[in-house]
Length: 212
Image 1 (cartoon, rainbow, N blue to C red):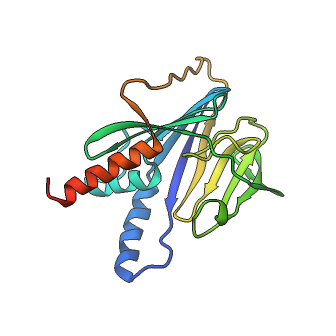
Image 2: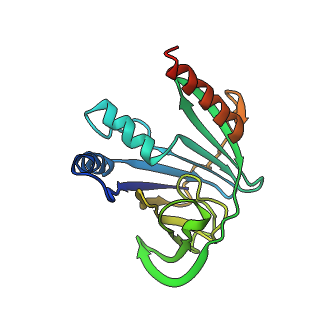
């Protein structure tokens, strides 16, 4: 099973120059396609491979970094998630437990594609963001997956996720493909915890600040 999400970036409150940069980013983000592949217990969320977003390499990389930190692997049975990312020219596998988030489920409905979706609200006090997070999920696909690390908490697949800086909306959904979806947990490089990854990042940043 797989879904494709298109992303839009919001400009928010900013100076004219920053707004111009945001508009460039937002225009490029219209071309962003992210792919969610899943079976009953596991999922992968990633940028669609081989798709160029912008003719400007730096802008291309910037938009991709805004919309996803890397490749997200989720295992609902173990309530584990692994982020495959890179920093300072080195690749990392960063593991974490799926956080339990207190969503408020509402009766508000809307149609996304052929699926009836319900609105769920995550108060900003739960995330540290400056706005509430809105998810539209469908119980018609009863798997608790969604974009980036918004997994494991809602009674259905998230087809639209509204964050303060971006909105992810499912554009194409393919269910029950003829070929079985097998998702292997990555073991190609060393796996570390979020805390270990943060320490590694601080170490690299300190080296860069010293001009090393």
